[in-house]
Length: 193
Image 1 (spheres, rainbow, N blue to C red):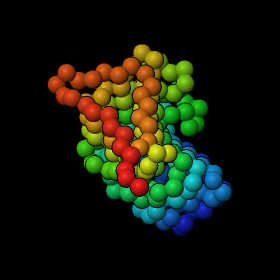
Image 2: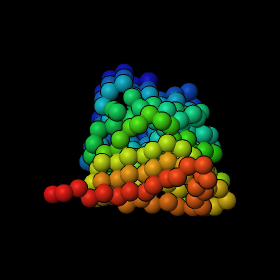
Image 3: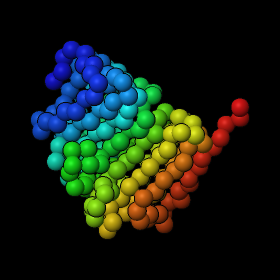
């Protein structure tokens, strides 16, 4: 647990029992924030212009985002502490050189991203790693805010909800399985200027 404010050129913390920030977390100079634990908690603003990456400790457990279920769960209220300005928000991925994630479950919390976001269950070379996109993903960050989902080579992205951006690209890396029971829509809208 970090009780005082943390400000550094880059922040990289990996801990099995949890990572908790009771005060502001800031990465300066365009550097990154990399967090790996089965519990990540924010109680104050998280600020930076590099990427912020959050993954489980071993890189092989389920991650729940925005109300989704997982060993590591990043809630809607915790997402609200991420201040606009990151180059990308990454869930999963090879932050600490781990092989892959089991499943990233996108929950029904309704969070709207203002920066690019990557649900990265398909790290380079990984065969497993599944994205369950059963709930909408919305981004209002503009043309530079890409929504990316990556699955392992033998797994898939289950897409049964909508992905909407404000002009940013939607990138799906891996096999896409669209539910027959639901229709999904990919939208990239450019607002009037």
